[in-house]
Length: 320
Image 1: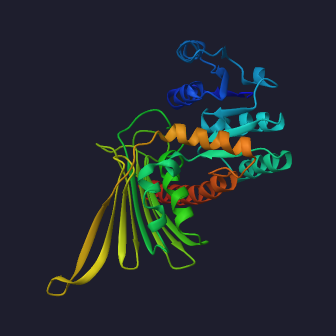
Image 2: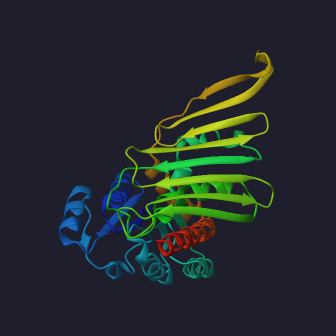
């Protein structure tokens, strides 16, 4: 069987993992890794046994698909190049910096019959997958995603860096248009907002409260989903899930009984699962697990939140 030809564009922290996963697959030939940092490209090249390139344009005609793991500002230019050349693309989140850019990429992929998958990795988190079918018509979602400060990712706000993960998931759980958004935040260690909180109200009556921070003393990634007669907890970081349901009778006078069930969450390599889903989508010409439209929807909400945060920061600045 002919192996599918793959390459990874950008082999920094996350891109290196992509290269390692492709190199481990028997049905894939990793034909190259690309990075403008020649030393980094050489290091990853040696580790995965694939040639190193400094310019992604050199791969035109040599690959069937690529993972693009470059800074967000380069997403559109890089993805458009490969899509124009008829090459399938797995593009890291957020899909682009503007909605117009996202629309353009989706249009190119559709016109050429190509797979454009967006790298919202938490979709493949086994803690979410274990309870996904138990989440039905959520009324309220509380999400928190916080971490200590690291320079990586600070070319964009914390909304596009971290919060966008939860916005994508919330969009899939609450299938409704947005009625209103309020948000606030602060820039602390970088020139971009480093902490943000948003309240999103949907037309169907559901509400989401979302917090993201990259200036916290510890790391935490979890989501609570509340629905009729139950609430579901998802710990993305520790890969644990639980369902708490209203039981029969009372545990104390006036206090309803609660039946809590810890869910068995299997071990899983998320990045490998994401890449495997991408390859399978290319092979079967099927809709990817996370479509370009999914990525665009998450970006739309993120940009609205970012705008609200910046408005509040301007007000704070003018009141000094």
